[in-house]
Amino acid sequence: MTPQQITLVQATFADVKPIATTAAELFYNRLFTLDPALRPLFKGDMGQQGQMLMSMIGAAVSGLKDLERLAPVVRQLGARHVRYGVQAQHYATVGSALLWTLDQGLGDKFTPAVREAWTAAYTLLSDVMLLGAMEEEAAISG
Image (cartoon, rainbow, N blue to C red; front, top):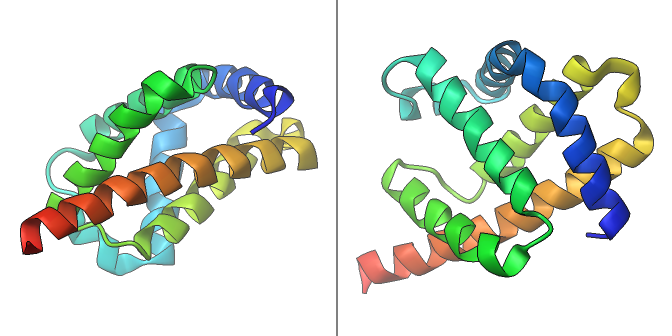
C-alpha cells in the first residue's frame, strides 16, 4: 500500500465511524446474501458481533502505518478464525461484502481511488490473516 492509500483508507473510515452500527448491519446482510452458508459461523448477538467487527476494522485501519506491529496481531486473528470454521474461500466473499458496504455507506466519497485503496488494504490484511490460518491448520493437522 502506498502512503496515499493508507491516508485514504483512514480518512474514509473516519466517515464510516458515525454510521458504524448501520455499516455493520449492511455488511452482514450483504455477506449472508452472497453466501448464506456463512450464517451458521456467526453465533450469538449480531449487534455485538457488528461492534466487534467495526472495532477490529478500526484497529486494523489505525495500524496501517505500522505494519510491523499490526501484522502479528492480524496473523493471530487469521489463526483464530480457523477455529470458527472460516475457510480460505470465505475471504473473497468478505472482501466483496466489505467493499459493497463501503460503497453504500460512503456514497459519493467512495471514489475509484478510495475503492482501490480499500481493496489494497483488504488484500494486504486478508493475505496476512490467511498466512496465520495456514499455520494454524498445519499445527492442527500436524
